[in-house]
Length: 611
Image (cartoon, rainbow, N blue to C red):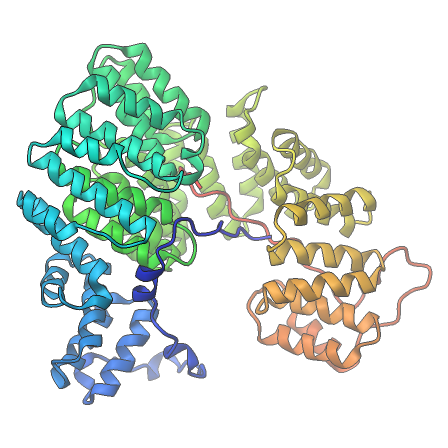
């Protein structure tokens, strides 16, 4: 029951194709890692052929190791300077690595290359815009193609070029007249408001930003843009002396995104009578905001390269944008580059409302690098500094969970519940859920169950809670029908989540309904083919229905699959001897040969993430 990101929104097929690097590296058979003393350093200077450099570069590309990929692509070009494909990949790697100036040089060289035109147009157009060559920028950024996302992006960027040229009314007329899907409005409302602010038209800015923050679809479609609109409106009202209206705007954001530290910081600033400056004050910052808006909306699993490209170019235009740094840090974490993430989080200015967010994420990234004690101390300091910030407890709890320190995890969430008080908000379900997991892992079910049920009271159909509680009830042969009903509801909510489908299959197994178990576990294996626990479960179910050859095959797959939740010695014993006969007097399937793993505890939601 690990978390699974939601589906990609607003994808651009053309750009995605450009950024998809093939599986040359993945086709290789993994070899045993040599002992530490046998490892030899390998660099581009050790390669003496085009094919060697190219294949090694592609491997680095797939691994998102852009510095190495760049060096190797350049090495490949030393053998074949005219190779267009290598130059395309070099440009993209440079941009993804944040080397905008070098990427710009390659974009200029490739401006006639139709296969990367969407990238070169944006890079060259925004370079012209940041140098205040607004007419040149608008000409380069012109777009007449059929893609909805590309049309929105280029029209907004072109409009910001008009704002820079002193043609704000023309720019806003262009954006107001944009025709496209319903989701356009989320982006056009915010950027119309930001353009009006830069032009000094407070009334128009207030109108458009109000439209943005009252758009019910905005938080689901583009949460980062929604938050920018909330904060821009609050700053506008504070600057106009409308303190209560500014606080009301923040309250709208609080309702949609609970416990969001930047909103809390902005509220505190406005309550003190301060008038925080707007984030977007120039055409270049506005154009950077376009790519931030689109990149944030696209920020879903599978689109990391495309999102990173947008955000890196946005960062080049507005290098001091804290929310861009945080999104880039989050991408680095997704791509398993925690050191890069830490460096990005550290660059968020100390006086930024986003600093608290970056500090929380930095603590989690430290844990990922193996610096668990440093991460603990870092996050404990954040809790001490602001004990009312629940996200600090959630971040610290995540580190404790990974370290399997469930006693400290339970104590941490006990303190968080104290801070919540007697009347929790619906958004507080995560705290109770995680406290329930901590006590369940401590085998204190009398304390775990009330927390799971409290989480369900706050969020009645939350699939993670339904799955975890339902699985636990079935596994303990306690309230079997209620537990099974909970798991079915979780599957209905997330039918493509292999871990939750596995829970349903294993529940049937535990109840002795082996044919039903096989049906669900086969589906779970289709969804998560490489998970060791699911393969192990399917093997057990096959054995019970008499499909013993297939059972042994699945157990063997479990041994070579991912995951640490299975007892490998027990699996080997099952391969050799099979499962013991069932006790005819047992009320559930006999577990003498295999102890099923608990449902996988999801990591708590990352601090201050909106999706």
